[in-house]
Image 1 (cartoon, rainbow, N blue to C red):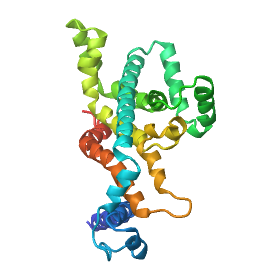
Image 2: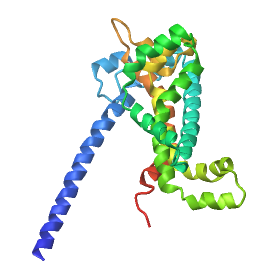
Image 3: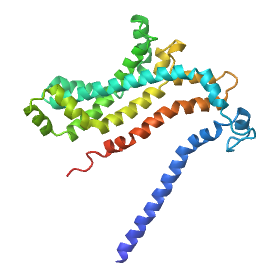
Length: 287
């Protein structure tokens, strides 16, 4: 009995310690975001004077948002970011899901196994290694830079390996072969079986891939800065560089621009959160 009491106390102490650690971690992660929210509604002078004050001496203002949207041509760059992110994400999901399905359902196909191995191996190659050859080949030889389509296809090419890996595991683990066999008996072709049965059952994985890739595409600065040279094609991360001056930087405008850039992805995450959690936990417990 005494041993059980000691173990119960240790378990309780462990829970308390874990709660404290998680609480401190949460504060460390949330603090920068809270600081942005507090200061984005203050003029530059109030931010410099007291960045921790909830309301500055000059009161509450939305001038930072108005000026930031005007200087960065927000609606234009937001449209560019939306087109690029939406197109690249949809293509990545569709292509990777189909590739993973073909590889999983054809284990005897040696070329599929080799292709899958090469895709996994490609994920360890840093993008910085490919930057110079990428610009040299596609810009100097093919002359296809300064185009949204080029950037979209590059995003798909760089992200399809991880997405295929995730779909591969989901199809192999969570999609019973019996469902497809029953559909085949009913006269369904492989194409219809995939779209009518397999693909709808991949919703958790689709949501996970969507949020990972959409965040990466929306927030990416390096690749768009290499591909898009014309201001009319700028995305939000590139446009925010207009607020970084050589001798001075308006922190209020930068915070407003970053908050505007953050909101669409935050809304998307909140909308897909339920599916993401389902995707992480699916297959963890098998009956």
